Length: 161
Image 1 (tube, rainbow, N blue to C red):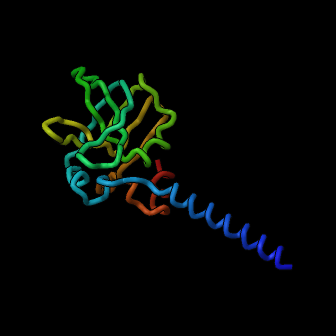
Image 2: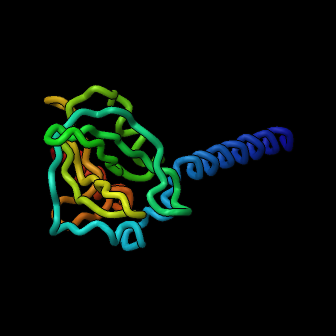
């Protein structure tokens, strides 16, 4: 009888460890990307702009020193041919959402032009790639980053296109 109880206890303990490990593995590293932080305060929702162009490459970025890795798009502006770096958000949040995105796609980026370390770059609210793919990273109404939303709020926003 005590062997069965010990085995049950051991199984329960292992399952608990797996559950806790999964929970920690699911946490995102958004250091420096937090709502209201130094980087986020650069986003002025009243000064939105749109650029159209071609996606040249997807790259890892660190907009301000010490921030967690982020994802950026290097876009060639259709209007003047300039290359523009578009910040999407923290890598842990963005990468799973853009798995189908490839260089060469025609994109339309909605966001805010900001100056960081003497360079003009875009902080993206949302963008379209081609005719049918849409990606959203901030609330249109106030610029709140999606990675700071609760699970319920995020599901609601991602279900509305």
